[in-house]
Length: 182
Image (cartoon, rainbow, N blue to C red; front, side, top):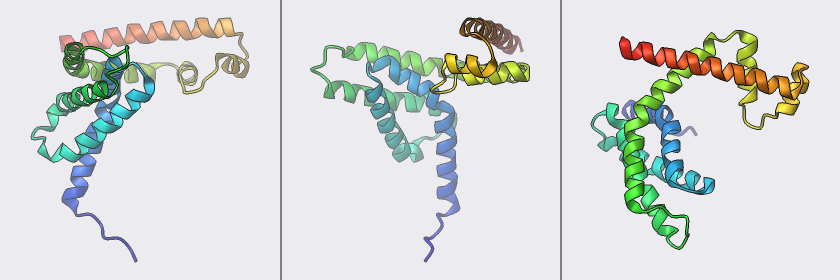
């Protein structure tokens, strides 16, 4: 027997939430990481933020404010994690966490513009350089293995990757400048 299909309104809510979550997750994770000392705790806080945001998504009146809204949820979840780890000597003061969360929420639109610029600049790279850059920064990548695959020495590969990074940086700066002038 097939399970009943969710109604279209619920499907639209799900899709809307997932689209916004995916759009903001990277910047949100960076915000949480700046407030939480251990990677395992970052994952726990992000999971808690996702659950709370999912549960309360219907209370969000303006999807344009999702970034700031979910950053506020993250702030509270970081504070709760801090209270749970109160005996740890690496815990940040609540005022510092509040300030980091506030700054993180303010910087989220800039981070999205930077990521969009980076995507555009990576797409402009010649195919061979684009594939090399993506391979070098893929999870679990080894420069030694990549050097062997490309027939280069590790040293020359590091230099080439450094030049590609500089090209991408200059391209991004130009794209962001042009965006501000437009």
